[in-house]
Image 1 (cartoon, one colour):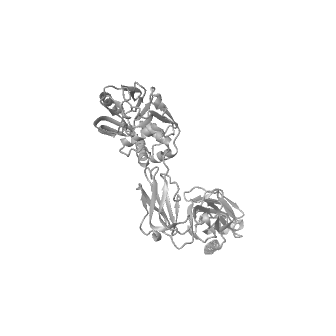
Image 2 (tube, rainbow, N blue to C red; image 1 turned 135 degrees about the vertical axis):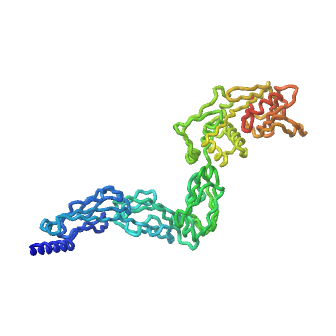
Length: 523
């Protein structure tokens, strides 16, 4: 009995020792595959391999010629759990077990750039270097390319001279061909110089999108080139400066961005050399031009908000409502359809309209808008106009006072007609200019609106006149105005270019002719 127990103990000890020293299946590194399966001669054969990602998702693999290959793209630096099952030779099963299972954690290789801000000698090729050989490379917008053989230094295909002496490009690379390309990073290169250099995106002197980002990349670190100071931006723009990396500052505007039609200027705390420019001149000031909004979009918004005798309906169901969408629409107007609001619109007014063309009807609406919003009335759609207009569009702030139009017949009997919201609400005899000082034919927007004022000027004979107390004045062309005047009769040329009305008629017309109202003088 004791002998049997001793034999059993000896066998168990021998089996344990054999299990410890018996060759095991294991995973080793591979230059091209996910891993290499190492099987010593008496370790047996592999019967199963299960691979899972960190979240437990199964990763399909194939074992080929001792190498483990993934059957789908994997991310660089992805952690994987590999369970390897091997069956031992039958004769060894009684001693060390018929099979063994080993669990190993591996990580897919991850290639990193050794430098992202390069200084290149004139005439030298521009290259990027990685901390390990790479197999798949993406440079800029070009299609990713598989290298014939992995290498740690990759040429950009450029030589540092002329227009290529400085530049920036997005780079992404993987160490293995079966890896997914990671998010690209910017690599910048500069000519070798003893002073700080700058690459700006967009390039200074070019167009800047109203909501676009300004990016400044310096040859040296921000702390070394600028210290704690930051560039000064004008005009003042909502947004913030961000440190993207040790060498790069970016400004991202918020809200309505830089403003349509604005000239943007940045003043740097320290003079630098713009790397894309020839010569050695240093500068502190950079400029960009934001494009102005289109006339067509201006008309669309004026029609939507009630400043035109037309309506506008977008072709798409949803109109742009966010600041970003409105800015995009200002530069590239959406499709849609204009329609006259009123069935009985004067032919003279019809003739003044062209979609996409800045004729007087659009200028008049613009002047009404400027006056309503307390802006300088110049009839020019500048940055402040666009800012206020897009703000009203987003808020749905409509003009509800209707649309007025005045047309004057210069043939005798002369008359003035006031049209408002689809009908003529007043028709009155009036006087236009005498032959020596005729009222000019054409269409003009009212530019000054005065309840009581003094009118002065020069008579045809060279003498001067100065008439105080003139009531209900609406200037529309130089010194010509619609106003009340005391005459014995009306309907014939009697003025010095103005359109004179009886007091009662002038009193009714005046509230309907604010700044921007169109006045047509016709025969």
